[in-house]
Length: 100
Image (tube, rainbow, N blue to C red; front, side, top):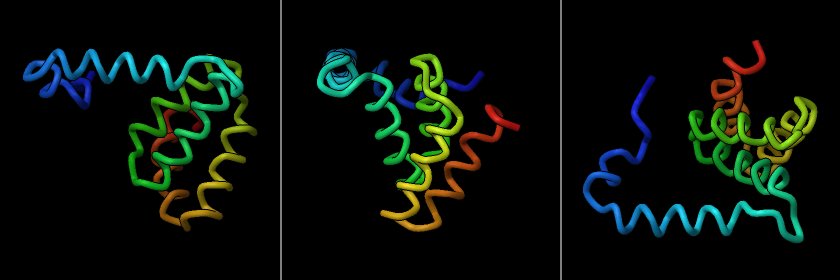
């Protein structure tokens, strides 16, 4: 298993990492939008920004929150529409192990 992508920062600045975790907990908690919807939005952003491992991680978390394969596919359509085909390639790479 690979290291956490922020493992270097974790060891260098644990106070900052605690801040990031607290913010993450706030952002992804249920509110007006469900945690599932927020994770799907984040997945679209990661697909658009070329972060295939982020797509994978967020898809796994969204699935645990009850997201379906069809919902994830529709999020990728939104990412494509707003950002172009690069997000589709990123999403495909990030979802390969989950759905093939």
